[in-house]
Length: 481
Image (cartoon, rainbow, N blue to C red; front, side, top):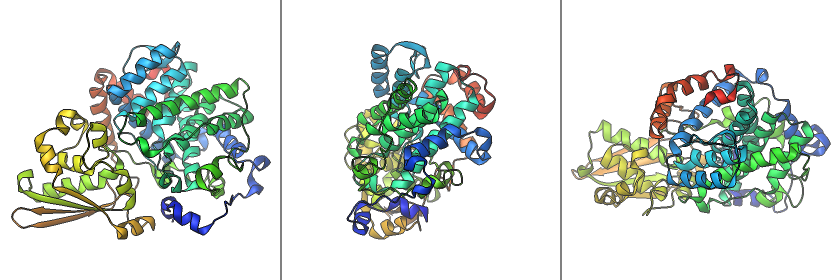
């Protein structure tokens, strides 16, 4: 199964092959070069040739992007990025979330990429464990507004960038993440570049050079979890995608064999492992469908979501309150354990990567949303007391079963022990929002309305939402904002 390939740990891959091996089937590649293959696929992509279900998922991703970007623009880190952009970049035609001022493309992409990831409420793909949309969408939207592209072009470019990002995630497997590399900075950057190149209408060789230029400079690590660096890096990567595409359009070139070179992508990031069969499958298996996109109902790491939902369901079905709960025990697979690294968070951002904080909010406040992302809530004695009741354990059986694809990669088994002696259990394989358990359109629209109101954009939200649902019929990208 695909999910097994995605979740193999790096040490298992290394055990299979001590010598770096490129699994490249050269017969289908232009000049035996993966960069040219990706560039050819992206530059030739037409919206009419894309299945309807892929277009539908892409529209949902863009609706979610505008929601989290507008809502995230209110966050302090987004304000910092926006202030820097106003100083460093020229005026232009591209929207900057949280401001009426417009900037040149690179500045807008940087500011909006930061805003889109500021709340950690944006979507995720398990191919590469990547927040793709938060990097890809700001890049293509900035250029689409600058040159006033059509909605069809914007949607096609987003699909092109997303598919390249997630195809590369499949080709390397999730061992890259387990080594400590952050897939968003790797696959997201390359996807943003390909999408930006598509909006600009770059030729085949120009697109290949753009991808090569961007790929040469990628690389961020998961050490940034729970810090300002995480959303800021998302913004930097979006700006890199724009910059690489514009430079390639001007004639700049890059290393054409950046993926195959012994000093290149596969060797440096993944010990030479790069399964090119996924490049062959790009027009048959779309990453937006398989493995699909996780659109979040909670503003926290997806690793918290199954546990949050299971806890909420147990409390509702058994009419529980905080004062009756003695302790909460949560068993999780390794992917969850290595992502939720703060058992005693000191900032709201750390709290988004804390099972203790997120579950404490669910127990004490019966919810976990944007309003919980504050120092006041984090330091509330009631929340701190509930956090002491919550224990997380990595479960080898769940790790094995999730790796085999028998359960979700971020599943959770919750046990609530009450003061009156009850022991209540629930297992949640996948949370609502996951590709196999998606949010309904009504839920997504409600998230959009909530976050745009949070970002001070509520008076224009209805029109923007309607336009995004009908993106193919928008003649000018600037009409969206």
